[in-house]
Image (cartoon, rainbow, N blue to C red; front, side, top):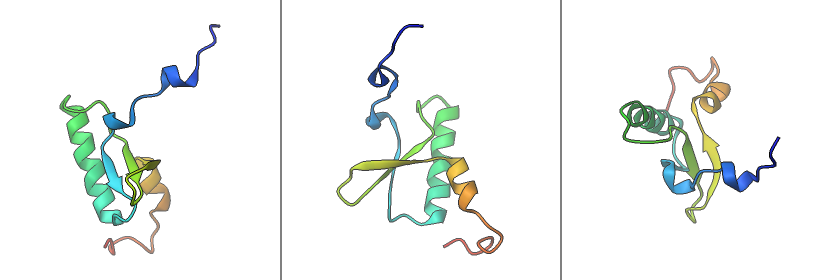
Length: 80
């Protein structure tokens, strides 16, 4: 097996849609839906959001599974 470098597998951050770390849960869901639509229509190559801090540095990723993991019965119906 050929030894590959991680940098050869990585995609540029600029290819990902972004969201602020201060966004609400509802805004994250809406942004993910928009990213999914763009991905399905071929307008985007990614459907994962990059979460950015106030300095606009990307430091985390957010995808549907991330949001499902935090969803609990106590939160249902009270998305703000």
